[in-house]
Amino acid sequence: MANKLTIMQAVEGMLKLTEQGKPSTLIGIGPMSSNLLQATFELARDCDFPPMFIASRNQVDSDEFGAGYVNGWDQFRFAADIKAAADAVGYTGDYYLCRDHGGPWQRDEERNAHLPEDEAMDIARRSYQADLEAGFDLLMIDPTKDPFEIGKVIPLDVVLTRTVDLIQWCEDKRKELGLPPVGYEVGTEETNGGLTTTDKYQEFIERLKVELGKRDLPMPTFIVGQTGTLTRLTEQVGHYDFENAVELGKMAASYGVGLKEHNCDYLDDETMLLHQAAGVTASNVAPQFGTEETRALLHLAHLEQTLVEKGLIKAEDVSNLRDVLLDHAIRTERWRKWMVGDDTKLTVDQIFADNEKALVILDIAGHYTFNDPEVKAEVAKNAANLAACHIDAQRYAVNCVKRSINQFVEGYAMTGVTTRIREALDE
Image 1 (tube, rainbow, N blue to C red):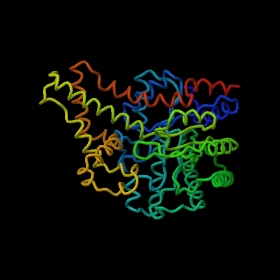
Image 2: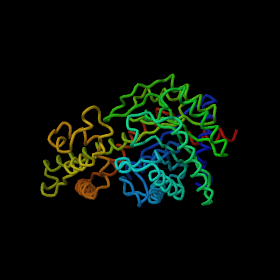
Image 3: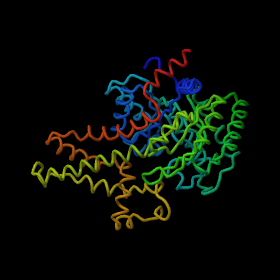
Image 4: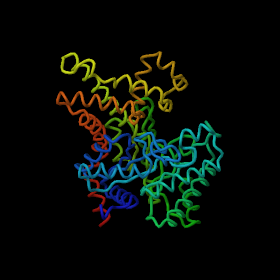
């Protein structure tokens, strides 16, 4: 929209609403598919909230680095498809393109290759430049993935230096390109980032403020804090620390910064509602919505088989959606980050030999395969068969994702928050 609020203004408004006793929490949505974009914009249109789309470098990145596993998106195609999705449903409100976990070694292959720091930092900078040129609103500066420090807490001095250096580079490049201001997100939910206590959190903010001030650089828009959320398998396995969330939220707000949570998938209703009392400005949710869409596709595949049994679809015409989705999900090996214990070390062959484990992997990792040509072909074949029986498969998938997102819209009191933000800023 012509008078779009910057993400910095949106957070300023959110902090004012919290001060006024009218808090809400915004949601950062992992852009897992085109169906998810449609679901999000339909809800945002009807419920009046500004979605944030949080793209990791594995999901969306420059073609020179291999693009992303979601729709093969680079930053420019990502931005264009998001605009097209908004236009398609008549959404004219604010939305924000956000880089989630930008920085060195943030693509799996870079970390696995143990790239030298200079090379990893150079790649990070080039990726950020494409973010800026594509019109991203928020850049997360996360230098805490380090293949040479696996399992170790990266010294705060190192995190701070890399963070400030990358913000400096992005600001210099932004000005050189004549682009408008962007917001920054710093910190990480990863324990190796060292920001796991309120003392460390405050120390990081204070030292960051000093270093940014020396260089006349802006304070970040968000600082990530650890409130106990943790996603594994398809569950929320963390223990929400309400008192910690309150303290971190107040601490961040005292610096004019919003508290951001990560790993907020699969929260129960009570924990969602606690966010209003805690004053959490925003939280990220990603794999949950991908899993919901995977489950929708599996339901559609089962429905197709039911229609074969009822004689409405010929057996020779049926899709192989379930088996292809299962095969590709296992072979991605992207499921490893969500597994626990020794299961993280299982081989692909071991998974194929264990039907129970295979189905767990399908639930976790199906969404990583949505752009695979063979999977897309089976989705299309399934949809065509169901359409012949007057069933709209794509609409069903979108609705399943919408139901999942709407839990957060309700739990985080997001309905009408765009209007409330603007009113708060006008006061």
